[in-house]
Length: 354
Image (cartoon, rainbow, N blue to C red):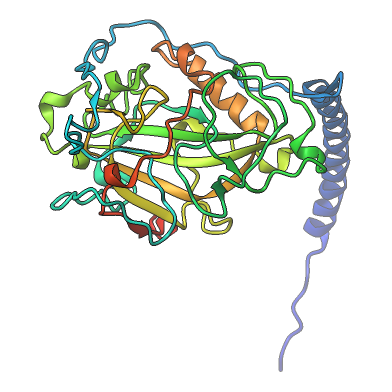
């Protein structure tokens, strides 16, 4: 004979009463959260709004760390520029940048024996030691940033202009609505910028002195501790952006390095080659002696919110070293001639790395 169990309902009734009390407490907490959410909404209305047709976004504070000794200061070897060609027209400089990075392109400079770093720079033991950007692009990628690209009819910068992205649309408000810049200088919505992250195995990686201006101080900070094959120890990652006034294109950590994302495609079509430092003081007659170094260039042009740049500038202002001379776009070097561009360009997809 199976005896039916006797249930004691008292604990369940006690639990039910307790549950009712808990629900009342939860309701009270939810009410408080609703009030806090309303307050936050009002605050966001202050932090993110429009004024005089400009969008204003409040970004991170710019208070830096305590001051201290900068072991990287003055480590730049100070290599002077040289003539690219001798009096007979022969190339006398090493390979230069920025080059044409269109898929399939090869320069005619014989860089035999020199292979660029083919993994992401961090995977090769390098860390970013600086971030800066150029007005327009120094590299050339057919159909992405080339001679058919365009931008605002007037520019707020007097620096030498490079190529521009082909995606600019003067009828789309995200390319034309002004932004109230709080940290970056001489920047403009709708304009194209090529961002560079110089990186080095000899940087003060992981310390308060990692980011340096000028960038060569960061690159050569601990040079005595590494080898002399510069293209294996020094690299620059480059990514091209067109600035938009649209927060759906916000990326908060640009100071750390280029954007790599398998979903969006950032970093999936990279051009790798050896070259030199760049800038508008260099040309196809005046060459850099900071060579050879690895270049890793994203072939695509990407939209990015103005606030992403402004946040990066805020982060730069919070570094121990004074990076104020990199808060504005630098001039772009003219496209490197075939004779000065290396013949070792290869492609890579960095989205496959962890």
